[in-house]
Each structure stands twice: as structure tokens, then as C-alpha cells.
Length: 55
Image (cartoon, rainbow, N blue to C red):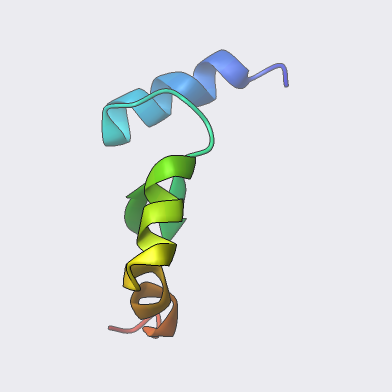
């Protein structure tokens, strides 16, 4: 993407990482792919996905 460097800069400012993917669920930063796999295996991802946007 033409704006790849800009996106990486924004990610670095937001979450301290500029690698992709960076996963967010309802505005909560889960992390990269390894973090997301861990969140899936320990049930944290399911908890986040079960929350409504208003919580």
C-alpha cells in the first residue's frame, strides 16, 4: 500500500509497535498475530468478542 509507512507510524504511536497485523477488538488492542493466538487459546479473545460495543 502506498500509505504503508504512514500506517506503521500511526501504529507505533498508538501501541508501540509498527508490525502488522495489530488486532483491535472494540477498541481494545489485543496485539499481533502471536498475541491474538494466545488470546484465543486462553479464552481472552472470546471474552472480548462477547462484549458489546457499549461496554
